[in-house]
Image (tube, rainbow, N blue to C red):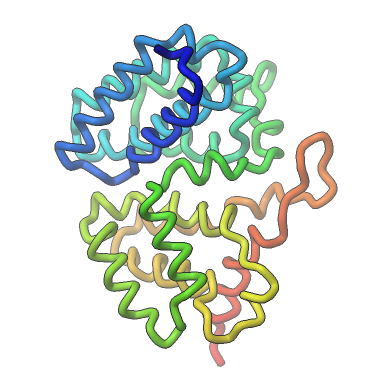
Amino acid sequence: RAQVHGADSLVGVLLRCLMPGDTSSKACRMAQELLAMLNAQKAWLLQPDHHQTLCCTVYTTLSIIGTHAKSNIQPNLQTDIQFCQQLLKPQFKAVATTIGRDFVRLLYAACVIHKVPEMEEFWHLLVDSTTGCVDTVLAKPTHAVFLTSRLSLELETKLHFIFHKVPIRQLRRYQSWLQSRYLHSPEQQQLLPDLIRYVCGVFHPTNEMLANPHLVPRWQMVGWWLKSVEGNQELRWMCEQAVLYDWPTFNLRRRPNPPDNLMNLEPAMLVMHQSLPK
C-alpha cells in the first residue's frame, strides 16, 4: 500500500491534522493510529526516496511530544517517544540537517522545557563537541514545508484570509474568532510558537500588501499573540524565542545552504519598534 502513487502527499496532509495543543480524544486517537500506521511502514519511510516525509514525521512527532507530556497523556507520549527513537537513531544527522534550525528548537523543548528524559540522548548527540552537528543545523534555515506542516490546512487558509482580505479596522472581530476556534484553552495555546514560526518564516507579504495601509500587518498578529500569553511565563518565553529564532544565525550570504530571508526578521523588528514609547 505504501507504494501507491501520492502516498507521501497523503501522509503530509494527515500529519498536518496533528497540531500541538490538541488534547481532544479525537486528536489523541488519530495520533495513535497514524503513528501506528507509519510504524508498520517504517521500512518504506526510511527509504531515500521518502526522506522528506520521514523528516516531516519526525518534526511533527517532536512538536506534539510537549502536548502529551504536559497533559500527561501517557499512551500517546510513549508512542511519540518510541516512534522518534526508532526513526532518529538510524538517520539522526541526516534528519537534523535536512530540517534545519527548528529541529534544535523542538528537541530543546522536548528535553529541557517538557522534560522528556528519553529524548536527552539525542540532545547530547546533537551538541557533542566531537560528533555533534548543532552548528551545521542552526546554520540552515528551516524549509517552509516543515514550518507549514504544524498548521492544519483549515488554519492556514484562515490566516491567509486575514492577511489578504480583512481590513485592519475589523481585525478584532477575526482575532476573537481565531481565539475561540484554535486558542481558547491553555493546552491549545501551545500551538502559538509554531504559529509564530509560520508567520515569520513562511508567510511573506508582497510589496503591494506591505504598501496597503488597510491590510493587517504580520507584526500586529504576532504582537497580539505575545500579549495573550503574558500570564504564562514558560509559553511567553517559547513565543519570544519563536519570533527571534532566526536572528542569532541569520546570514544573507551563507553557502551551501540557502541564504536567510530578511522578511523572517521583520515581524520582530516592527513589534519592538511599535512597543517603544511614543
